[in-house]
Amino acid sequence: MPTLKLHGLPLSNYYNIVKAALLEAGVEFEDVGTAPSQQDEYLAISPMGKIPALEVDGTALTETSAMVDYVAEHLGGSLYPEHPLARAQVRELMKYIEVYIDLAARPCFSEAFFGGTVSEEVKATAKANLTKGVAALNRRARFMPYIAGAAVTYADFATYFSVPLADRAAQKVFGWSLVADIPGFAGMAEKLRERDSIKAIEASRGG
Image (cartoon, rainbow, N blue to C red; front, side, top):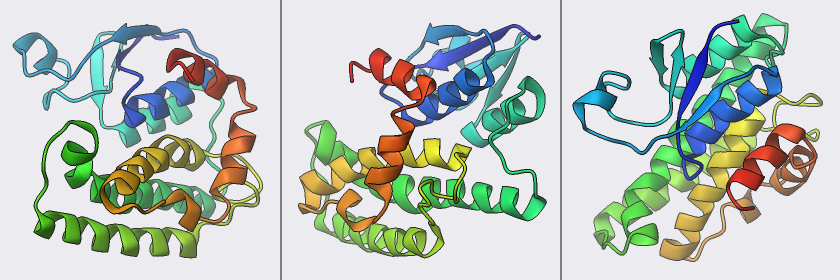
């Protein structure tokens, strides 16, 4: 088994997604509390200075999808479906969450969380993008009870950790609850909170 070091902080939804994948795999890893940084030492690990990053025997991986795929393919306990098309659909859902929910909401984070001010034009664009993103996600999501169907997948972790963050931003900036407009999210989240991996992460977040 390789030596694993996960860099990041519990405030990051992407860090939590990768941590959940590692916990589900049942592998040992060092949890290295690391903030985003443009210092040369950390840029040698994460070239954009972002979190999370996963060191595997001293070789660093960045980008959440790459880390989750590595865990699934090489560390055991994959939560991707066996069938290639179903597996592709889970990756599709993860990309919907990343691009059309999380990244669509991020232009508002400065005002929502950090005391900044966002222009009305930026807010209007963000709201329009989020509206389309929520509608698109609802067309793809199954919530039976999990987002891709009857079995838990990595897409559930992406949804569980990313949607509430976007929801908090939308509520503060627009007075709009994304969660309320995603039927099935609450039931999926309740099921996930029964899992040991999620319990451990919530404890680390003080939840």
